[in-house]
Amino acid sequence: MRLVTRAAWGARPSRYELAYIASTGGVKIHYEGTYVPKSLAAADAHATCAGRMRDLQASHLANRQEDYSDIAYNAVVCPHGYVYEGRGPHRKTGANGNSTLNSRDYAVCAMLGNSGLVVPPDAMLDGLVDAITWLRNKGAAGTRVAGHRDGFATACPGDRLYEWVQGGAVRPDGESPQGGTEGEAPGSGIARYQVTINGLRYGYGAKGAHVTAVGEALVDGGFGRHYKVGPGPEWTDADTLNYQEFQLAMGYTGTAPHEDADGVPGEVSLHQLLGKLPGKTTATTVPPFPGRSAFILGRTNPAVVTLDGGLIRKGFTRHHDGNGYQAGPRFTEYTRRNLAEFQRATPALAGDADGYAGPLTWRLLLS
Ligand SMILES: [Zn+2]
Ligand SMILES: [Zn+2]
Image (cartoon, rainbow, N blue to C red; front, top):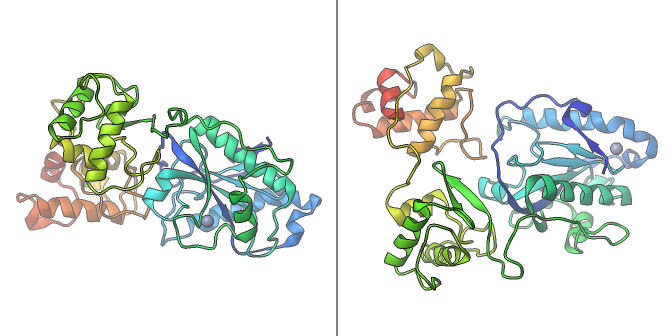
């Protein structure tokens, strides 16, 4: 494959650190969806493709409504079949419509329009398969290939490219994308990936007393019918299937891997099951208060990452850029609003809930 790295196309740095993602169910295909000149497909037009990437990134960074931290796609493919590194593997996309959809699939965009260049050239289809294979091999993408319009109201990726997706996303010579290291039990569709919640791992193959505790809570709740020998310290398919029944009883839907009721815990369901979130840390030491000057709207300071960690642990993350609330060094209006909600919910702080941290807010948030 012909990969063009961020350095090679002249990418600007991310505005703040992109959210890590361990694996996805697959890849969603997008198009630019504006007018793209047919002349872009000419052989000598490839010299302009890197500039087109820089423009695309600049337009996303300038989108104040979405507040993107970077170009939204994990990869972009030009008509000449080159794969441009966007956010890259193991980084959550911002392109699929909402935070849930962004966690489920990576996003790959074709430099294709809704007018002008609307028919994907063969080289572009080869490049798209290269990008999908790359995200499978380097980013643990699962085997699903879908269109942006699947699950979200949009015309993207256009009728011609969507036909190609529905036809199996194959190369012009008929070869299917390779790889897909998701590791589901063959043929069964049982999810076999792990998640980390509060420093502890859950999902197939995870080990520890916290795994036994989940199994015991499932049995207590009446969700133990898949155990042949009772719950133990190693997470097996039986744990996944029992946990899935618990998720379905909670009203979650979608039992395929990486859907809400796939039998792999999330923070909300785990808290519901156990009445708390177990964690590695028992005693917490509060770092020293960095001073009020660390928290100025729009400025960055390492202490904001610590502050965000406290907000996320305590669940005050309602305000975000549409991409989920993530820890980062910039003190944004989202940070301020989430912190104000924590202050309003804390009796000792409620009288002065302005969203800025003083020593008492700092101590109560981080202890
Ligand atoms: Zn799209
Ligand atoms: Zn090109």
